Image (cartoon, rainbow, N blue to C red; front, side):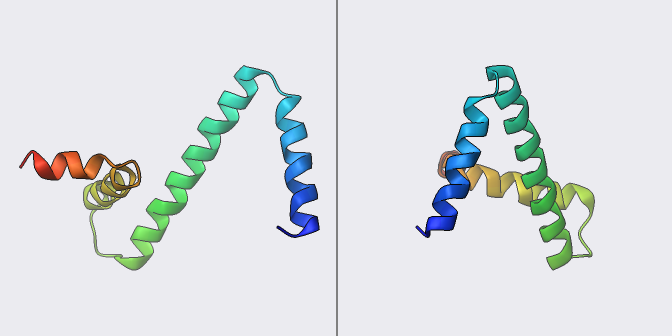
Length: 77
């Protein structure tokens, strides 16, 4: 890890430590929402003809795959 990256991470962690649990949880939810928005936009950019429901299904599948749940869904078919 580069020194600059290490210092940035150190500052970020110090900031998190200065927050209450509620503030950290709120931040986590906000970051998750942002990631989902960016992922949704990426899917729409790759496949602009998809309906919103189809984009949402692809996004849900990607989230499940990232969490290992897709294997469970596939084995139940």
